[in-house]
Image (tube, rainbow, N blue to C red; front, side):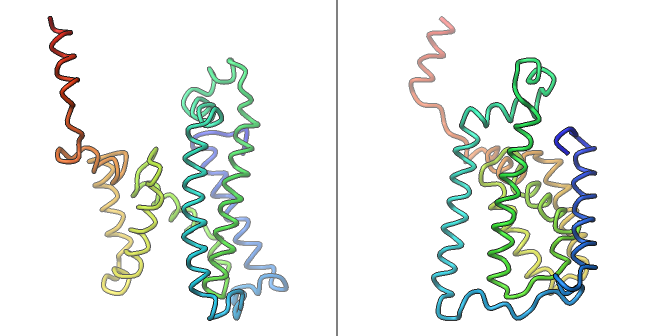
Length: 219
């Protein structure tokens, strides 16, 4: 996967997810098979409030860590590997090592999220490792906005709300959600946050210094 990019990387990621799902389904002695692992008491009822506070804290710390990563030298190197891989490699950047590192770091976050999810629900099923989970992660990014720091937070909130509210009222709510995402991609490829930034009343008005500078430049 480190050697791949583009559609090949996407296909390999989905294939790996399918292998993990099949393993979790068929390894009955470890995972419980289709029945999953139920009755997990990882958090007591008395500690629920503290646990929810921990969830919020972990989420905010993760976003802060991603913000620091995006603004660091490594973040700039990752952007170079993503946008101009040949030029980045020619400049001496270790593209393979950078990909490997960011894959491992994202896997750590995903594993942490999975452990906290199991503690919250008290049960784990093989369906959580299916391709549908990877598709949901993609929907979260598309909804909130690509290249937006808070895009994943906004997207996951909307997807959770849609699955909880629309799932009870609309039979084919995922089809409605898909049409909604298509409209967003047409109106704003940067997602909802990118669309909000384009609204006139949310744009920052230029200060008086900018007007004066423009006048001097014209003169």
